[in-house]
Amino acid sequence: MWGLVLDDLKEPLETHIKNYNAKYPGLLKIIRHQKRQGLTQARISGWEASTADVVAILDAHIEVNTAWAEPILSRIKEDRTVIISPVFDNIRFDDFELLQYSVAADGFDWGLWCLYEPLPAEWYALKDETAPVRSPSIMGILAADRKFLGEIGVLDGGMHIYGGENVELGLRNHGIDFGDVSSRKELRKKLNCKGFDWYIKNIYPNLVFLPNIVGYGTMKNTLKEDICIDQGPVPGNTPIMYPCHAYSPQGSAVINRSTKRCLEIVEDNAVSYRLVMQTCTGQRWNIQHTVKDWGKIKDLEEKTQNSKH
Image (cartoon, rainbow, N blue to C red; front, side):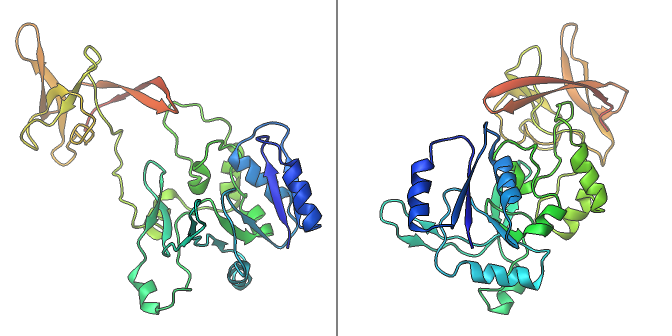
């Protein structure tokens, strides 16, 4: 068994590697990117350079202990198509005390933030803490059959930001140029992948389902951007305009599909209008998405017009 260190052109590692290889010859190799390519591509480069039957991809802050690999290798030997995401305990930085982490499944929310899912009752019924748990996602730690990982496309090198590679779903906002994804679509076709709806129903039923809506979020007044649509003091009553506060119910749905009523405006007097929920008269809304992108605000105009029903 030997290890790879992928240097994504961050800080000099030569001295550390030289000293380690002098003490443990032949156990460690280093691969250096000529330019920064991001975490996901660094992991892919490590996989490409590996030659062993099984490859383990670990974050830089991960340490392993004695006999950590044997249980993982045993699972992969039983089934080469499984990808193992082992549980790692926490190590306190100040005194190196080990803090045990409980077994959990790795999941995510609709913002693609990773989270821990509670274990199913069937797992507890086994009364075996070493029993594997089906997990809809992974964290930044995985081990897999090297060839099988290549057969399913490894990771998506087009994802440059940490976190997305754990879920690796083609979820993008409409109107944003997300680049060339033809290779990933071809891979999906080659593997005969099922749709995301199947994934939710069969693999991740715990994920709270979002209905098939046109959009969600807060609706602002373009003439006075500190004013938003609000449900008002009475839930289910006619919507009102209210100072934006970014909390529910301003971020909740305002379209009632069951009654087929639309959110529209009517003349309140000679100079103003008010919002009403009424039988649709054909009014249409132009929706503008405002997306926060790592500290930058992008106003993305979407020409799609909604009939609001």
